Image (tube, rainbow, N blue to C red; front, side, top):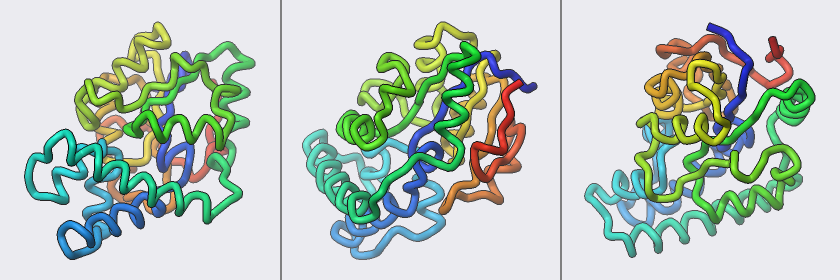
Length: 221
């Protein structure tokens, strides 16, 4: 079912095509802590998940809270360096135009991302996000809810917009994210074939209405 009552965007790999930057940073962390880099299949499995979940996977055990903080800071420092080395940084093709068109039609928009607060603060500065989204509609990993593929973050995004899940459209680029949106009973899920995404898998997943290669391909109804 297509609906454009509200639009909810994943961020990393969806609005910001940074999948390869994250993979490079996690590979450096992986090499340091387990002696090997992150493989392509592992990257596809981990994309969309929280830092705590990724760290647990790489360590092969449940990390302590202090380990999560320390390794997260280490990884995000590497990630920031990689991003800044690839300036100018821009949102995905057609994304800004779609968001502005939605707002002109009074269609509410939100972000639902596994990124932590520190990265969100970076993105606000890098992309002037608050000119596109209300701050209350930027839902990120606060360490208190279950991460994707559980539905919690998309349910929270719907609540932030005051919309029923069945009336929302979600844009996602990862297996975990699509599963999260599907479990939240989102009305329409659009898979985004961004660089580094597992396109062959995500386009055939339950609940996926369409696959787009950039946001200019999406038409508001």
